[in-house]
Image (tube, rainbow over all chains, first blue to last red; front, side, top):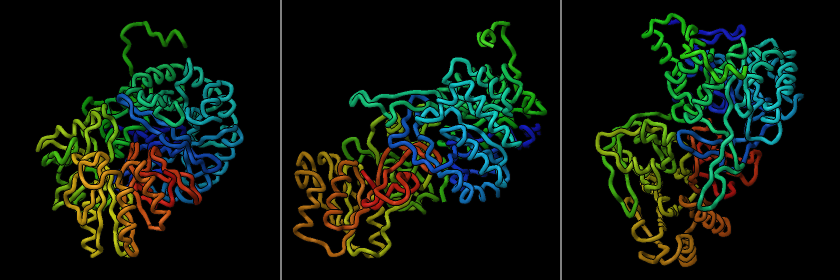
Length: 314
Length: 256
């Protein structure tokens, strides 16, 4: 059996497959359907200081091999999370990474400080890339100085793994990955959703209440792979790949492109055990290929030539 | 308990104009599904359609489970094309069923608009088991869309007057109840939002308890995507989730 574990800034993950924020609730909705302890980790729904109602319906629409969402960070707030959800998360044998969203830098800090005093939080992923809220979200994620500042402030508050989740809705994601690394992030998650839109041609209305939303699913996978490739060549910290991963082959592509681990998102909506299936598939692939450590796949892309457009950006 | 199962298709039959019923076997779902609950169905293994589609459980018989549908897009066209021996991937049963066995009413008024007939056969069977009399009101565009099997004490309304009352099902209900009011009734309804809105207004106005089963865009069906908010009229939260907190709601608690 190949070694599948992975250490992220001192945090041991049993495999390289996590479930993405906003696609697995707080981990307690899928217990009939998946043995969540077989996941490398659970990344919670984004938590804000105060509970958020989220956006009005319609919040989702399916598009070709993908879906648009505009949930608007609906969440129960960090305090209720600590009381109602953390005890369960503490009881399961997998890494628990709490995703934090906020509309001010101070709010990010306040949420992290509340969590920092709680047992059972293994790390943080910082959402600076939500396309579906007016304040915070993309305003932060599309400004390198803001990503730097948020990272630096949060870094000063915790020694646990600090992961910045980046948006693809920028010209060069590598600049943001570098900014996060220089400000002390332990890893970057690449990528959040792409801004997208769909229209009902009969009513001429947008299909989402907020007009635009975030595109995810297999449709975005080639984009995500290129972003992971770009970011991973720009930084030495781990890149966690996200975007349309439906099966182990997809996940292995991300590892080869430069991701140290992956997150499974939209696939959970179809199969809540997708992450487990994918982790087992990676393991099986390694055995078939006589690979002793899944880590040796990371960044193992074999170049076809010396020419890469991405390299010219870096 | 929610199960995910690959289920063998037994048959697909036509039950009306563009109304089809698919039957498949699943002992676990047939045993546990209640009226108003739904299944999230993956028709094919590919990525287009990508997501599952929710369908109210129409009928169960032994290990057989039936879903009723109109062909409206790629997914439902594929569903209609299923042959005996093909499979469909089922997640369910999901959601909160109608509260049919609470014993807080003496007559159940079942109302279905179009495919909103879906939860009514199981509701009828459940009510029969607990000995509560049923009055059923079905509405549709025309006679071809009325699917009247497995129902009791049925009155029909059609928009085009091709069967029963010429008009909509809420008008029919209003007319009927004005003539013959039931003591201590409760309405259980499923249908298009416009119908449920009119029905809800009627029920609230006449102080008749009313539960409605909603339909709308959904991805996961189990609460993890937060994609199916239902606006609430009061209380601590602005939105509930159609999939997990519903799809059945007391009509007074939601804003349609």
